[in-house]
Length: 178
Image (cartoon, rainbow, N blue to C red; front, side):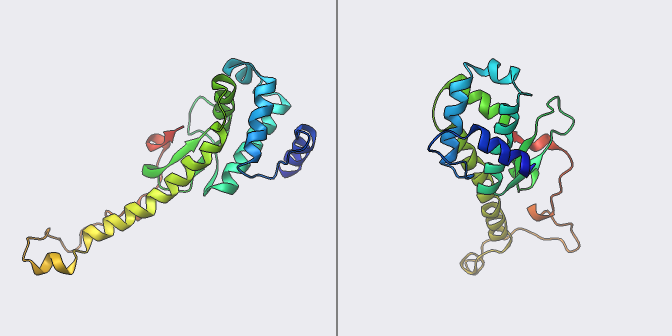
């Protein structure tokens, strides 16, 4: 994939810009998409075109390098196009489909659509540890709470853990698609 992506970058990189996998480079990619495609349907129709295949790869690799995420494929879905998933348990997962994002650029014709995908993935990754901390604070009542003689939640010995850390991915049904 790296060699193909390098060739694509050399072939399609606009004069005076850099495809360095930065957020800023996504602006150049958006301009290329806007110059080539009139709308959503045009991008979808060209999904197997070398430009679009390379653009999907470039966008996906930029997302992965900029946010804590990884490549994935739909779980039994109708799409055969790769996805980028946040490195989080299913309940916190954000999924970005690069072809969908490229199509939205052509359809909406607004700047920043591709760059916002990075923020979506980062938010998902940031939400998970916050939720773990909140859960932990509920499990360990503060000293001030117990000193006021407020009733505490009963605990059972030998009960199974309900920690978010123990979640495992069973299927993609909890995924959010963006």
